[in-house]
Length: 439
Image 1 (spheres, rainbow, N blue to C red):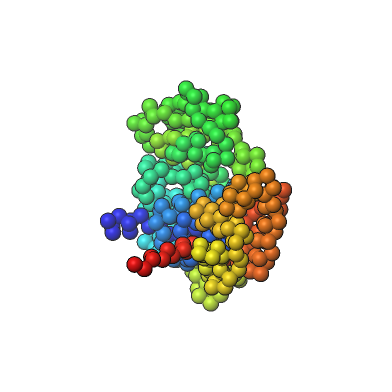
Image 2 (image 1 turned 60 degrees about the vertical axis):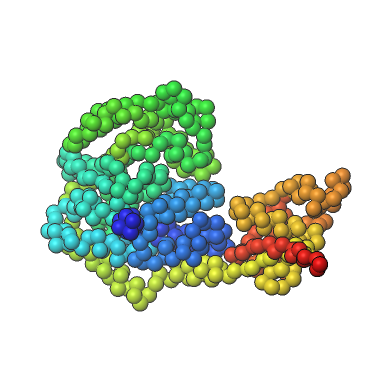
């Protein structure tokens, strides 16, 4: 068991890149709810994402990246643009776990200096370096003039389980940009022809989709068809025998599907989904070579010992400070009151309103509420004809202004309001003690 867990650990490369990009793109106040809503404790999440040489389980890695992606989509952010910006910073080396990268190259450094085409060497070594336990195999393709056409094929994941759409996409984008870590240009073009995750998962919950017969529909529109994988192999022949997968069924997307709210590309035309293997082609100019490919990584690692990247370090410290600010909130049933960090805040109906809000927030993380939810609660509004809820809610707002650094209510729309936590909240209810009568 211990060996299995150890083998399932991967470097926090994507977490550190994504976390640094989030710190640069959003304010601390915006990021606090994201971190607090994670299934992993807030402090552990930040430690996993920040430390330069941290290992994290593949399952936690996928869980966190999925949470990041869903949050970005909810903010209306284009995931493709976020990834482009994130991987565009690779050549700056500031947000890269440099020790993990160097360690993976260590057995092959001498060979690397002797390579005529160092970018092809990066592709050839992916299987041996195996940083992310993804089981990619390099397949050399035909060269056309000064241009190489090489492939990576993934035949099953050592980390276990099917890859998520976001993780799989980010992994290949990282590979396309990985030469920049060694002061080489990124691969000019990377084209994914087949992926192992299903087409409905590629929609990321933004649109509904599924098969009806052999046609794949998205929001009632036919966008793809169920075909044999042999069709993909005929279109993109490679120098590797994959004939055993020829009869496997997969979905061929016949049109691009884009999320209209964020602009994120969900399905790609002519890509095969639920394929038995992942197949990606890398097109690039031959014979790129630099004199000292590891000098930048080593120099940046030494520099980190003396100086952190100031903008990100500052944002990280501010977020950590906010997360470490914990408010203990208790509802006392005996006297129908609420206290915050041991100090009385409110009593009676306002306390019950806040209690219900905190119950729901603790249980589900929900922050948006409708007035009618409370008007129907006899504990809050006895008279259903004239509930007078708005004036009682105003009293809650007034009380919360005294502890604005902990939480607040934002009445930003008619008929509803938003609960806004400003720190980590630990809420519990203390029931009334029933005293036994003396005999």
